Image (cartoon, rainbow, N blue to C red; front, side, top):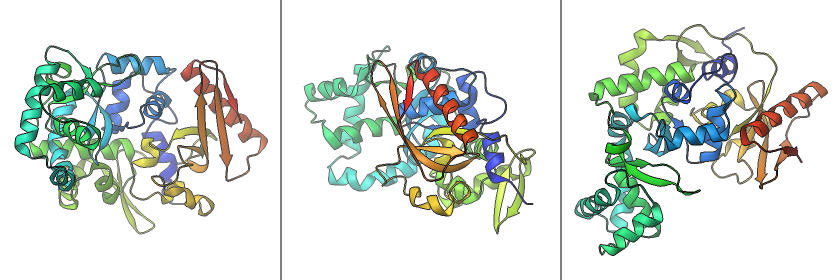
Length: 355
């Protein structure tokens, strides 16, 4: 029969079976959780927890139990405070390399960033977190033009230098804070220790997955990804399936109970693999252009397979879900879709209507 990749990934990501009891466990299991779409990422965390609401995730975020910063590919991810320094240090060189062309174009050099970092450090000292607009004002007051793309590069550089990360919300606005304040107990690891830990968490939390999947997810070079896998492969299991070698930890799931999931397109189940093949059928392959398809904000997953898309419109009284199915559902699956919508309603604390 062969390896059931879909069932095993759903199980290892805790989208089926036993739920985690705290948000930190979800993030550790994944290594990091993609989070540039905060609302989608909060929903992704809650799906792996027992009865967690948006308010619960917001509270954990505001208290600094999970932090948001640029690591890996790069994009924003949730990471744990104790992991932020080693993870940023490990993945920052590749991010800097990717940013270097635009930094030169914008005439942003090391001396410029050093000046900005001193200003930002003074502004954020002693837990005085600030929004991006407030940081821009502080920089401007110190003679530094900081708007648009320039501002984005300034704060991102400060993130990947291990200086700043997310602070609590200010109303509905994100803020920045000093890592020294938000993560005073952050671990320092050697490069090999960091490579080994990142690979261990990825293959345990995302497996079965290939080396190519890990390379994509981590943003590391192929050489570093191979080294990371070699450091931990004696702790992992592996199988060859359809001509590809997959790595994982522990027993694989053979089957799952029928279910419908409403997922963010940036959910780790969708985005954490270079090869989307296992979860897209021939008739839904056109949806795999996830970065260029304006329609594909969120995906509907039936028994681990993408079968359509959904969008949400939220107001203070209700949430309307616009559903587009590529595959017709039977009555039982329609009921499962309603259950998934009810779960989303509970998460938001608002009634949900399916359009």
